[in-house]
Length: 363
Image (cartoon, rainbow, N blue to C red; front, top):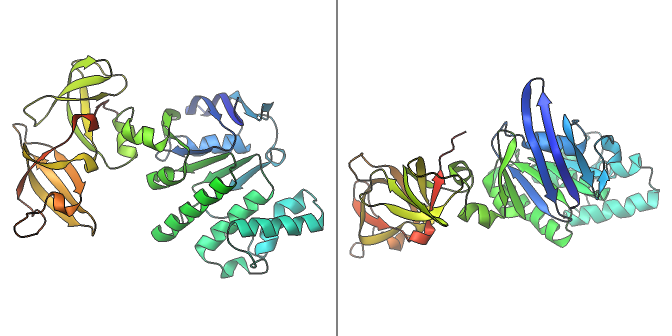
């Protein structure tokens, strides 16, 4: 049993099932991210864990103890919200100290632990600063320090970076990851942002319609998605529709619309011969290959270190739109040193080991 265990947890809101039976173990010190679209059940899982929602069925265990019926204040869990939820009439130190004062800890202990928490989030010396005078990133770190200072058994974060601008969000992502590596705390992090999930997580659980459809490391999910939904949700994807011709062991052969020859790739879950499926090849695996598949450039976007090309594969069905991102030299003309232009026809290909054949899932 891990530090946190969901045993058959379900949740209904009236007649609507918001959460399918959930069996999940989170290891001590693990950073687990729940990733999925709005309405997939991520926040429901978090609120049940925190005690803000009671499950319809099932039990929740923390370090082997059943906490299902224990109120939130007695669960020793820290919560970080998207809107920070800081007290505007309190300064930084008072905000961080709030949970310790509620637990009636001695004053000298409170001071020591507040100073330690602020040091961890790189806000040392700002104890007396008004929270309204802080930047958005600093306010989020105060909220994180307040959650950490009580030394929770479990740290819960509900889309805490959603209100930050892109660059600040990336900076705080790295700060959170560094803090976790330095001081591992069992953490459940909710987001719909794939970049956050990839940067910070030990494991990622992709959710859809109230259930976990795949769980694993970022590498596992990116390289071996279970279906087209996971492939679309985690990373840029080229998904070309077709029909499964054969399945042999870990591989499957698919006839792809617009391609003359069948393609072989790693087989996803629940494939069936004769049924529709999609061929997945990630943008970084699409390469210029003389004598390969002809494709017309429909869009070329200069991105500095990369050139992103949107390609229309030719074929009797009219082809399908693919995306290629590669170092410019891969598709540049050696004669004029210019990137491939719109309406140019290039010849592309990919290695068979970089291809997956996945069942189609859209919702």
